[in-house]
Image (cartoon, rainbow, N blue to C red; front, top):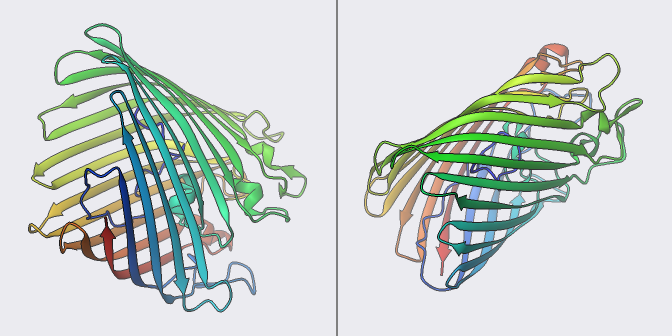
Length: 416
């Protein structure tokens, strides 16, 4: 499995639908860059037009600007490479009279070492302070929840790849993610619902059936431990949401050509809730599916498609978790030598497990369209449009949740 350094959850990298960088890589060990964007967001609170509770915040729009400087450094030795990167973000909203700016920090360090031609280890750590769910908590990004406070997440892990003769190999990995939301002090707080530690251990046995085809047999163990100090409801501890999951699956990696490849995984997930409330289910069995395909149909042009079905965290109080299916597509196309386009679309359907929302669903659609004009190897102009829509069955229970959101931006990016 090549999911080690993703946060355990459904969302894949890019869930926030951010435009890709157009600045070319260089041979220098260091890099310095920055982006400046002006934007309009017609629902930066990611809330429905109707108040969820009388007097509570609702949908609001704002113009603003976004500044993101970054610095990186890499060291390349004979058998070892080390990469480090840090990005600071400042996002200003003219509509907000207090706390008008969001501040984010994203630090990443990774190390890869080859013991021999047949054995390699990779280690990575990513620390994030943010309000944007696409960066902070990809596992719940489909609901686009936004939190104003200085919340943080740290994801660390390793992966070992080894060859066992000519036709067999093994991949072993482990990742740990800690989430901390600065929103505690009340029953049912976001901290009670989402503060947690997630563990994910994985072992794959690979069989190289041919030059183009590799068969996979794998096992994965995931554990989620809630860390919130508040109760999620009167007399109900957040520990009732703890989970232990066992995954068994088979799969295949196949290359039809150097331009077209697919990765298929399918199996069963068995989940146990060790602290489930009396009278609720303490185990469940569900399918597990992870499918990806990539087609490089021309120079600097590619199409990626995928589908994933899994269980993940939810922000809905009373629910233990949610079972979700994610379908996504990403198209990168070079219109000319200097102009490139990116389209990123995803749809996710999530069904809540247990509690008042049992068997109710959220359906989310996200679309991003981005254009980049490369002035030279250092500078690029970029513009884009992003659309989010959430349709929720919870609206029928008297708790408005559904919303739409439109965003446009225009900016410049530089990299040295």
